[in-house]
Length: 615
Image 1 (tube, rainbow, N blue to C red):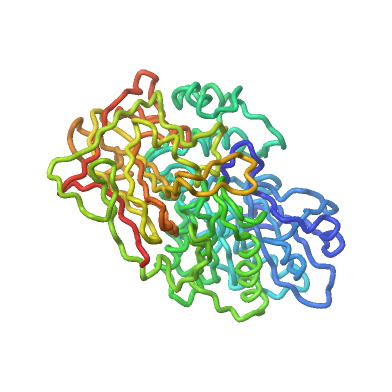
Image 2: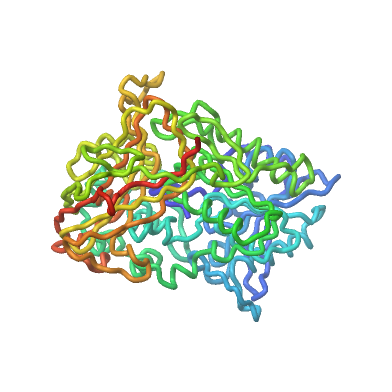
């Protein structure tokens, strides 16, 4: 699901063969394909005009419209990249059930039905099956081999369609797939609402029969370019909803009414059903994807854990923001340059060969389990398993004086203390922006390091390169004067003071001493025992908070420092915690209270960050 606020969603192809090329080489047909329960789904089919050979099919199912509508109205691009249209595939786009021109009822993240006893037991796997069945029986000159792909919400439909797959469904590429909305995807991260990503999205993402896309150039409802100021002025979640959601949106309200990991969310976790997957799978994600970083990692692992190795399960993780692999060069994110055209390389050397082999039988088909881009050294690596089997789990410990090291602390009674005021939260970026700026994933953290409500720990300058690969696992021994608190942990790469600025340098960024965010995650403290049942803190009582942060593959270069931040707000990326135990969507302004927090760093309560180190 795309959360790029105020921007048209990633619902269309992001390359451009040109409409004249498509018209000259393809004929477009429009069909309403009947599903097993009778609902008809609107489907656009682009067939190569050259009828001298058979073609494999590529299918994308989307809630974001298959526009333009009309048999004489053509898209400007077909397939995942330009190579596909020029090679020749039948390319199919479908409005999913209940969206735009398709009949039926739409559900956000349609729950999968494990038991299907009647034609009314439908879900996205059955709709995908029925669509493929119709296509291979009715589209002329097809090979009987079908591939599926999609980015973000279409990535969810791709993943859901791999379950109980049609025999003709040979290959699938879920890319940035929305997977488990509550557990680290768009909606919540470890119980904390991802406010900036969702608030503006649901202002335009509305129910059928007239779902809408934001018009190009649509203006924000805010009267300031400063999203931090705007969201803080909007007040509590209840006040902001009343002010901006004059027309009630059931999706936004539904999210707020389910603040715990209840059945509403569990039923929408598609990764729990990825068993017996028969198509070959290429799951794609970006290390700096602000919307759906967790999704591809969870899909890959779920298939790996539940299917035989011969299933053909592959992972690609590049240095990308949301969907960046499908457009542009992929040479930079924010201020961080990679000096490699990562996106075209992926499209030409991974994505196209994958579909060519599995659908057309061309190429050798010798694919590794994983391709990952190692940031810091800026190079692609291949692996026979992810995380790498050679990654040794080690722990970085918080030390006195803001030090960070692999040595366990020797103190028997030591802690660091900081105050937190939810009415003056820590900004998630140091620049003015509205909504969620995707480049925050690599942004400079110097604005946060200077605040008294952020604990900072860092190593000495490194004497040699240090490479981390795989998930991060913070363990924080914590107490508060309040009854609830958020814990935000950030891993940061600190550049040397004499690091050169880029040339040219149109933004005037100073890279000497730059503090690049490598990974950051919030955790809502009241869920430290269970995401199903919240539990208040006892003021002043030490407790333990442990959670998993999404994988990284990053090398901290010689002369750099490794830094960790601990803080209790990250606004407006994450909604404010009142630091009072209650249902936050119901909180009133008076409920938002200052609190003092302690992080312990001593024998028996040694706070730190577990990492995977490749020697």
